[in-house]
Picture: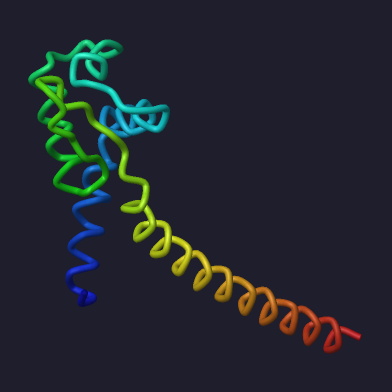
Length: 118
């Protein structure tokens, strides 16, 4: 998989995660499979609107839908989150390293100023 593909996949995933309704759906699916009607219950949205959210989540690879009978239950696909978690962890480490270098540089500047003042 190329970097561009990963970036595109991440863009699709982060766009899907940007919506609070979709995040709430994912939170619900973290407790187990659910049908569209079960997922629609806590929202003041139609099943059709929930279905549209599910299509976005499915396109992003965050959920899958089985074809068991007519209900087509949805389930969370936790492995898909690994790419996002790795990207976040990588960038978190970069910024931690930068802040550590900045802290060291500022400490040096403070020490130099203190020495000059004495």
